[in-house]
Image (tube, rainbow, N blue to C red; front, side, top):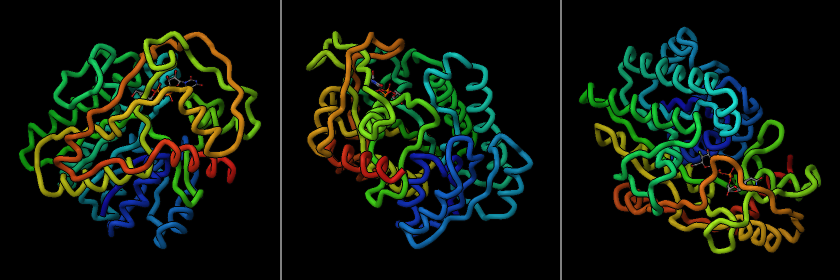
Length: 331
Ligand code: UFG
């Protein structure tokens, strides 16, 4: 059985769908701090199989111990963690406490139960601001621009050290680029608490009339049209990358790192244009100052994941815009 910590969230729920579709038994542990229990039933509607669910905080050692006692867990995909970049700058201790505690408690419990396989939800943010794009896995990690990023950096280090000390352990670190979109059923997607930080949830809320207009943060970057460039990847493609990573972890020991991105950069204005064209809705926007901590442009070299895992992103920016809007309309 595969344990998904934080499996009720945006990327976790899509990964649950793909793992179940691939024949895995899944148990989800989530404290529902940024998700809802109704996701389980929705995963069930998509796959025909509702995953087991326990509402626990993964940093709660006794609760996690009980979970490992109840289910025969042979692999873990670790998503649980706080992820709002701006909040991490304002409340760094909260981020370090939560993101590190969950990981340490998880690794201790895994060790006690002889579970030695973990796939971690890391981020391209660990490349920092000084590495040039495209980012390749062999680059030295950079200086992260915020505490959230540093927690990803630290968890990568902790897991790598754990695997070095245990020759039977298998760690796969997945460095995500920018996930967008939603499941094409419209049943699961991203549901941010409060005002969205990320680009696409903000755009869909403008399209739905919840927000008046998009602020485009910076139009004087050295990019195709002056706005920020990112490597946007459809969340279903990203989820499928986890299935491949788990298959890899089943056959190998040690630590391996993979970028999950498309290798293509897209600007903010290109996303706005695509969204308007695909969905036939207008997105009013205005230019605003650059957002602190943002960098002009970054994108992946995804060739290692293709070579080693046999995985590549298939879906387009148009798919991401269409699926994000379908999900928002159903909310
Ligand atoms: N943007 C706007 N207006 C908005 C929101 C975003 O113009 O209202 C722009 C940003 O300036 C940036 C682009 O849209 O150029 C993407 O911004 P996001 O906030 O969606 O994503 P980021 O690239 O800033 O952050 C993402 C993840 C983080 C991760 C980071 C680095 O959200 O988890 O990539 O990998 F740390």
